[in-house]
Structure formats: structure tokens, C-alpha cells
Image (cartoon, rainbow over all chains, first blue to last red; front, top):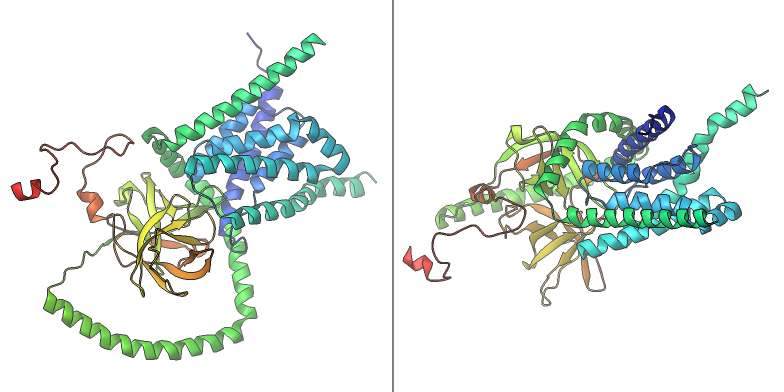
Length: 170
Length: 297
């Protein structure tokens, strides 16, 4: 029988808390009227950064469960966010091309590639299941705002690091 | 080398299996099973206070933005409101005359209106947008007499209908959701149509007769067909036309809604409770011979 690994448990607990907080943050964005047509996917950005920056491999099964939970909370089509999150993880870590993009162009391009590809595949599945065309303006607005917000969130996350470097390391 | 390759294949197989599981989940989700609906309503009920708490900063930020905007445009808005007030006073006198005439004519014709009563008026706890679903959660549930399928309105018009009900909260499918379809009619030209959401900002007019020529700015109201929504509720107004498609701006903006009212639905209440998720017909004791049974009764 496998021994209980406290580090693995602790890492996944932190990951769960981050994603749960991101879920609620994502829901709260709907009250802001400057995102008129659609809201940026802050949840996708946080998930991407958690996958990339946490020092352990995030469990795919957990990611499916978070997607399922998010669908149940928001009342959306069950499983659609599981597929979206799983594809986002897959395109971020598992492909050879992801590493090449990361080395050549940096994190923002890698996020753009994985986000747009996974969103389009998920949208295609959504279209097949519903047999209705969604509003293209809303999708493009969503992609645009998400890609614009990504560097901002990256900057906010890096602030403590910069502060530490400038003030404490001196 | 061999072990590395076998690990790679294992990984690929595992990833494909997970994607397959997600696809199965999507199709199972589309079946709209009662168990899943119950889990969803339980989670909504359980998590709505937390979600409400987390939404507070966003709400406050929105209020600050509104305040700044209104302070900037105060003078312009004042002039606009004065003009609007003058225009409304003229309309008011005309309306008062028409209304008294209408009441008299209705009395003469013995006309009966199916009035829906407001069951509950509550606060909007959260709105889940995103590109896949457009729903909102209201702080009233089965304990307040709310049932699935009841229409939800605001002071401006139709907001949507109830899709899941928990004991103390319920979820509303907004008119802008891709799964929302509302039987409506055009108030000026009188043509019936279906107003469908597109998961975006606007609604689309569908199944409109080829003879119909809608007017830009024309108001759309619910027709009452199908028995889900009562007739005469404002849905929106036609704002644009492109490639033969007419687009409707919903009158209530979901992002600005703080309170909504839930109406009773007499037709739905008369129907017996169906068991299962499939739209099966209820068992009838007599043979369903269209046109003949009516005479037999």
C-alpha cells in the first residue's frame, strides 16, 4: 500500500484553494459593466499560471473535477469546462510545440496559443452539442480581453518578487 | 529507451482517455438528468453566500465607476432628463385618454385577461456569464414558492425563466443564453416570431415570416404561446438588421439588475408533475382521437 505523502496532499490543497478562489473571482466579474459583451477568462489565466509556476505536476483528474464543479456552480453545460481546462493543461505542458513557443516567444505567446486553441476546440464541441451558432463578437471580445489582462495579472503576481529583489536583497 | 517509449504511449493513452471522459460528460450533461440538476441546485444553494461575499468588491467597484460617470455627465444628463420629462408629460395625457377608452371597451366585450401574480421579489446573488452559459442566481427558492419554469421579470421587462430550484436559492436562465427561446410578437407590425439568445449581448429574431417587415426600434413582447411566459411582457427592441437577420436589444441589462420578480405560471401549475427527464406524454385514459374526443366529452 502506498504511503501517505503530505507534500503531495499539501500541494493539491493549495492548488484547489487557488482554483476555488479564481472560480468565485470569475463569477464576480459579471457585475462589472465595462465587460459589456463577455467577461475575460481570469480563471483560465490563473489555471495556466498555476500549471506553469507551481513546483509540481497538477493532476489532470483534479482539473476535470474543478471544471465539473465550475459547471455545476454556474449552471452551464456539464463537462464543457472540464474539457476546456484539460485541453488548456494539455496544450500548455504536453506538446513539444509548447516548449518551442515558450523558448522562442515567451509565456504570453504560449498562453495565447493554448488558450485560443483549447477555447476553439471546446466551442466547436459546444456547437455540435447545441446545434446553434454562438455570437462571434462575444467570443472575440472574450479572447481579446483575456489576452490583454494576462500581462496585467502576470505583473501583479510578480510585484512581490520585484519588491523582494529591490528592498530585501539589498 | 524502451521504457521511455512505453511511458510516452501510456501518457498519450491516458490523455486521450481523459478527453474521452470529458466528451462523455458533455453528452451526459446534455441529457439534463434530474440527479445532476439536484446536485447543481444544492451546490448553488450551498455556495451562493460565499459567491455573494466574493462579489462584493466587484459590486463596490461598479458603484464607484457609476458615481464617477454620473458626476462627469451630470449637466448633460440634467438637460436630457428635462427634455425627456416634457416628452413624457405629453405622452401621459394621451395615454390616460386611451386607457379609459380601453377599460370601457374591455368591459363591453367582457374580455378576460390571464394575469400572472408576483410570487416573490428577490435580490440577485450572482450572474454567471462567460461564453458558455448566461444564468443568474436569485435569493429565493422552493421555500418561497418558486418552481421550475416560472418567468422572471424586472421593472423593464423579461429577464428569463427559472431552471433549477434549491430550498433558498434558484437559478434563472437569462434571455441572452443560447438555450433560451421566447415566443414573441412584434408590437407594431404584429408578426409572431421566436426570440433566441446567442450567448452575447443581443438576441436574434427567428422563424419570422418572409412577409414580415420589422421596423428598427420596434418593441418585442411575449406572445404567451406555449404557456411558459404570459403575454405582453417587454422582451426588447429591434436595433439592427444584417444579412436578413434582425437583432433585438434586451430591455433589462442583466449586469445592472439587483432585484427581480418571479411570476406565477398558471398553465405550468395545472400540469401534473412529470417523472423522468424525457419529454414523454402523460398517460391518457382515453384514445387520443384529435377532433373527436372533444365532441364525446
